[in-house]
Image (tube, rainbow, N blue to C red; front, side, top):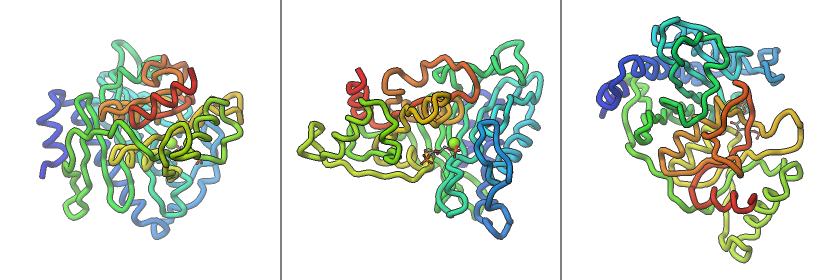
Length: 322
Ligand code: AHM
Ligand code: MG
C-alpha cells in the first residue's frame, strides 16, 4: 500500500506543496495521538477562554491550533497561516509559496463525549508580493484553492485529500505511523435519501428551507416521493465523510438567530475546503442560492450558509429557493 508521501511524489509535481501536505499529516498524527490519550493527558474540558468569535475554546482546540501553527510556521513553503482559533493571520516565511487555512479541531462539542472530531485544511497560493499577515492575501474564492482536505479522528484516523485531481483517502496505520492510500477517485452518488441538519434551528430558517425540510419529513407520500433517513453527528467532518462514503445531503443553512452571522459555518476553514472535496467527488455545494466556491470572501472569519452533498438533492434545495 502506498504511503502518503510516496503518493504525493507520484501525483504532485510541486515539492513545496508536498512538504505542506506532509507536514499537515505529521501534525494531525500528533493530534490523533493526543485524542487517543484523552483524559490521561489532561486535555479534555474547557480552556476557560474565548476565541475571536466569542466561542468558548476547549483545551484541545488550543492544543491542536498550537501544534498546527508551530509546525507549519517552521516550514519554508508556508508564507502564512489563518486559523478559526486565531484572531488574525500569522506571517511565517517571507518566501513561502503557500497560505494554509485551517479549523484545527472541528466539532469541538464532541471532544468531551469521546465522539468524532476532525481537522479541516485549505491551501492557497500566496499572491506575489503579499505578506503572510496580510488578510487580503487570504481572501480568495474557494475555486482558487490549490488543495484541501480533512483528517477525521474516529475509530480510525482518516485523511481525505484533493489537489484538484480527484479525491483520495488515506488511513493512519498506527502500527507504522504512516497514512496509507485506501481509496482513489471517490465519487458521491448523485441521488440520496439521507439528510443531515440540526432540526432544533428549524424556526430560524428561511421559509423555503423550512418548506424543503417539511417535505423531506413527509416521506414517500410527500412531493419528494422518498422516505428519507436523518443523521446528525454535530461534526461537519463526520457528516461530510459519511456523504463522501455513501452519499447524502448536509445542511447548515442561513438562520436569523443572530443578524451578524448568516449561518454558523466558516467560509474559509469549513465551507470552501469541504466544497472542493465534494465537487472533486462529483457532488454539489451551494448556499441554497449561489455556488459556495464562487463567493468573493470579505473577511477570513466570514460565515456562510452551507448546503452540500449528492448533486441532485442540492439542486432540489436550490429549486425551493428560486
Ligand atoms: P466548531 O468548528 O466550533 O466545532 O463548529 C462547527 C461545527 C460543525 O462541525 C458542525 O456541523 C456544527 O458545528 C454543529 O453545530 P450544532 O452545535 O448546531 O449542532
Ligand atoms: Mg469547525
